[in-house]
Amino acid sequence: MNDFIFNAPVKVFFGKDAHDNLDDLCKGKKVLLVYGGNSLKANGTYSKLIKALKNADVFDFGGNTSPDFKKVKEAVDICKNNNIDIVIGAGGSSCMDMSKIIAFGAANDVDLWKFVEERDSRPDAKHLPVILIPTFPMGGSEVDGASEIDDFETGRHGAIYDMFGNYAILNPEFTYGLDKNATAYGAIATIVQLATKFVGNFTVSREFAKTLIINTMKQLDAAIKDPNNYEARADLMWAASMGTMGILDCGKTYGYGDDFYNVEGIGEELCGIQYREAICIIFPHWLKGLAKRHGEDILELMSLFGADGIDEGAEKITAMFENYGIKMYYDDFAPLDESKLSEILIRRRGRSEEFSEDELREMIHSGFKTL
Image (cartoon, rainbow, N blue to C red):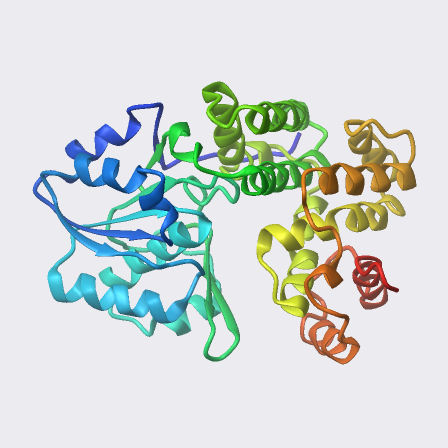
């Protein structure tokens, strides 16, 4: 086991009444409430949050369905012009990521895009207090230090790393409104993220990741069978958080699993798809690529899916994901643009520590069923 330092700076309130803590946290404060589309209002979560914030002055900032830097700048101006005290992000990872960047931008007089484009680790960055409330558990933004953002006007991507929120409100009942497809995407994305912690990790954290993967598969079925199964929803929500808060990285022997995020981003950019879609498609092909170097390790992971061989494992994973309605090929979204792929690979050259440019191209090609 390697040496490590572990810090979990986010205070988590978990349970059916977790949102009631908002009154103590926000009483007498000016609050910017950042959320996504209409689902937060349709499933009753919005009204519960507003009720819990009855003693705060709430500035409503909805309509954030994608991590849009233009909307971040708009929100930063609202914060500065109205002396906002606290930023709350409620929804999926996009809303929560935006909230962390808004909180930073509101507290600092900087060229915000220049800051996020550098993608530096800034653990001591000053920011407004942030409260994060996941309603689509998957990316773990509520407990991790990563915030991803896109400038859709220029096509550029930015991020802030190692800047955490202050509090996380985790109420499993807020996920009851997720349909079968959203529930499946959330759980399967959690499984994929946990798999990156399992591989190359020959410590107690590996066994922890294994247990979480097995339990997430089990509770996914339970949540689909009964969308209001509290225990299933609770396990899925906590597993998503556990996968990203850093505890599974403690003592990791060889972190080659982290290279996954250098690979999946190629598909996102190539086909204009969301993170959850990209990671599901590339996952079995990434594992097959890793198996050329780390065969025993990958085979042990695939055994969790009932496979005895690498090819069989990739096929079983693909079939399992498709069984839940997950689209497993890039051309379900867009046809292959070979020239665009070449441009992306050239621009990303050297980012992947595990794979050559030719190997990456082969991996992406494998994600197209028509090739």
